[in-house]
Image (cartoon, rainbow, N blue to C red; front, side):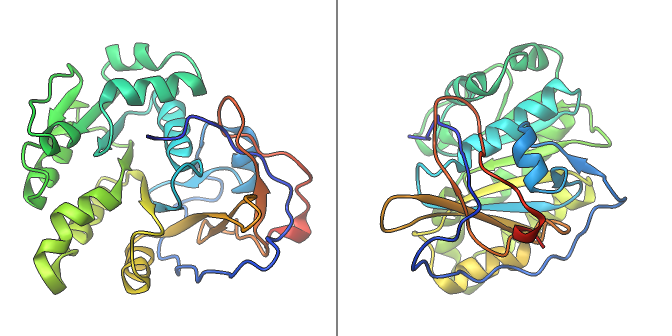
Length: 277
């Protein structure tokens, strides 16, 4: 079950924590300051204004670390600001996602009614059920990449083929396990195609993945295919940390501590320039 709790942070490194390798960014903001809000002012400050538009950002970390809540905050901020959003769901129903977004803020249901939100429901297909949500496009065969790619394109068409939009994939791990692994060495060509499709639309994308499920080679591939990474980590003493790579200058020297609370992503403590480079 996705965590429905927020984040806090202090800026201190995790004691004894290994530092995972980050990816190399390939896409920067098209214009200085051209950022998409995450829906949280403190996180936007940490990321130097938010997420670079037109880039694909990987949210990587263990379960219950806040990844899904970051994605929900981004979806909420985009939709209520008038920017359409397509949400690919593999582990929850649209109803469950709405409940998560409702913890972030209000107005999301109104955005749905005004055709600014579309879902790609892979979850129903994985359960062998029909997608019944009125705002969802079905991916009836989530084991088949073509089914997912078609559904994502249909979701964009449903939103009116907007010139600017957001895309959220919750979660990449489920799609890889079902659609990628069974295709051997070329199993992730579909992911490259999906990201190519999103980049042609100049969409701002967030994709969540479970770090402990994938091997080092696969994680390196995900980082290579995406433009940036926000990583989440739990230390041995149960403290939680995050860091960013490839987000147009929002790169942390150290892991930044956060805690999970009761509503949206919330980072506390001092943000000194010495901790961001």
